[in-house]
Amino acid sequence: MTSCDTHDAGLEGLKRLQVLTPDPGRADRVRMRCRTQLGRSRKSPAPADVMTGSARRLLAPIVVGGFCVLYIAALVAMTLRMLTSAL
Image 1 (tube, rainbow, N blue to C red):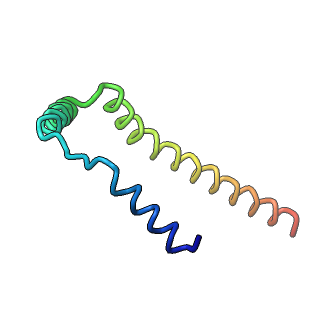
Image 2: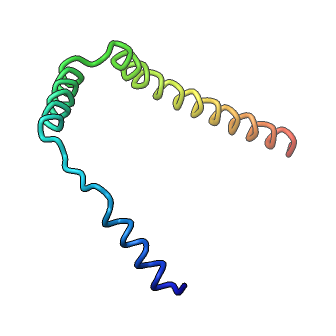
């Protein structure tokens, strides 16, 4: 048995398979369900999403500002230590 024979046998097996056609009615129902779900999610954001967004907008600058203050404090402390050790 050569590779061409196995290829031909595979093609014969494919010819025996049933050809499937999409169901237009089911596709329309699925589209309508998706559209209604998307419409609902666009109209009203979840309260947790609103809280998370506002908390993120408030906490991000506070955290960044806190790190900046700590960094500047560490620089000042290091500079003072260097000045006092040089004297």
